[in-house]
Image 1 (cartoon, rainbow, N blue to C red):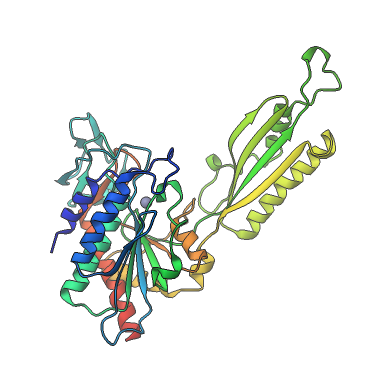
Image 2 (spheres, helix red, strand yellow):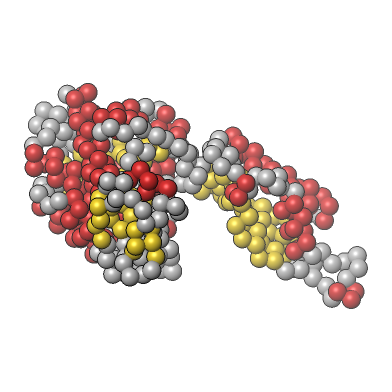
Length: 408
Ligand SMILES: [Zn+2]
């Protein structure tokens, strides 16, 4: 059986950096290459119905052991692409036995230091995989892929009993497309876990409800010399709009379960201003209140400056998966038990963003996220603990074992 580390290093070397400037799907050819390569691997380890979609999503199944067809089908999902924020080309990782202190990253002059990245302190004694300081590592999410493939290989080669297992590797997750083309109907699983990033022991199933507001302000442009009583300066009205929002409810002043209004961009002149606001809240009703607040400010300014001066258009982006997961408590129960059994304390904190799992959960595939043992994603300081990666595999195996025994 190919070792976990060998699988990971092999996947890490394929450049699958997502390209935000491409309108193709996948946005970079490396993702399709890795999908085809993995399709062969999955066939070799005995998976069936291995198929690749137009967008290079890779799906595969391990049919239930004879007699265990009634065990609920379980899925494991990871993503093939890496972040556009750092190069994914010529990834050249090193494996080190970590004894504490600073880790020099290749000849780059950069060091990975516990002063800066405190997680390193509890990883003394682990085997770490680090970059050469010029690229990202791609543990986000090739650690997840390697762990899933290795777990499936273990189950099949050891003949471990199991219900139907389904695997999917998606593309362009980093650009927010990871769930868009996901074929929930034909995936074949009733429940799934995304295996995507973070310390082992983490279970994430609470994320923001999100909406985007586009605020357009229509001004009246006139020569400044003869503007008195006539000019309507869209830029100034835009500033007024922003000043009417609660000043402390912004990303830079909130944390934990607090929501916010985020002015993410603003383009303005005298004649017209466009402001884009991201509205975020863990509580659905509170998100609705935030939307109402935006409309109320628009109404007040329209009253002051004339009808249709401020036009608001709000669209929903994604939803908190917690509601869905709460209706399927088995997913958290299974994960917590599996994590305990490997010797970790399960921890769960709110994701101040969205995940593929939130989208999939609301499309009918309840899907919390589990940690991979990957740290500092999206940059040259990314690293992974091989010890934790091995434990992540054990957690997958434990989950499969528990759901099988419970339903056998
Ligand atoms: Zn990821």
